[in-house]
Length: 311
Image (cartoon, rainbow, N blue to C red):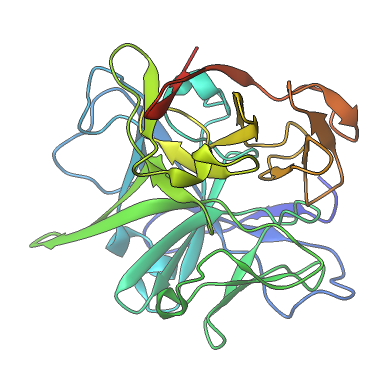
C-alpha cells in the first residue's frame, strides 16, 4: 500500500505490528497506532485475552462483536493509548453478513479517559493509517493534514476537524465491563454510529425495516433524508423521498473506498464527498472513480410509514 510499511515488533501482552508511513510531508506529527490481529471464532470463550471476533449467527449475544481484554494490550490500557485491530481477510465487507466491516478490515481503538472509541482506521482522504494525538484529543493522519474529533465530550467523535478529508469516520458502539480479571472491551459491529446520522430500528424477521413517519417525519417531505444503520444490516443505508410518491433506499457506502455518500436533491443523485464519485437514484455509477453501483433496496410507501425490504 502507498505510504505504508509494516515492521514486526514485540511488546508485553499481545503481539503487535508497528505501522509505518513514508515521509509525512504535510501530515501531522503522529504515528499510526500499532496493529493487533483479531482471531475469528465461532464460540467465544469464558475467559478473553486476545481480540476475538464472533462470526457465528447462531450466537446472537456475541455475533458481530469484537471482544478483548484491555490489559493484554499495554498500548491501549494506558489513558490516551490506541491500537489498530486487523480483522481476518476472510471477513469481507459483505452487507449480507449482518454487521459492518471496515473497507480495509482495520479498526482504530482509542482509550480516552473512561471511554473507548472504535472508528475506521484509514483516513477517508487517501486511506492512510490513522493515529491518535492524546494531547489534542484528535485522531490524525500522518500523511496529510486531516484531523478528526475524538473527545467524547465534544459530541463530534469521528467528525472532521481539519481537511483535506471531508467525510466523517465510521464509528462503532463500544462497552467496557470491569471485573476481577480486568476490563473486557466489546466493539459491536452491528451498531455503526455515523456523525449526523441516526439510530434506526432493527430489521425484523421478514427482512423488513419499518420507518414510521411519527419517528422520521423528514421522509414525508420531498428531499427528506434518513441515514443510519439498522441492527441486522451490515452497512448503513440512506433513505430519501425523491418526489411526492417515491422513496428510495441505498447502501450508503461508496463502492470506491467506503466513504458515506450524500443525497443531492437538486441533481437527483448520490455524491461521495471523498473522491467525487456520483451515483444515480437507482445506484448506477455516473462519475468515477467508483466502478460498481450502489446496492439498492425495494421500498414501499404506506400512509404512516416507509418499509424497506432488505434483500
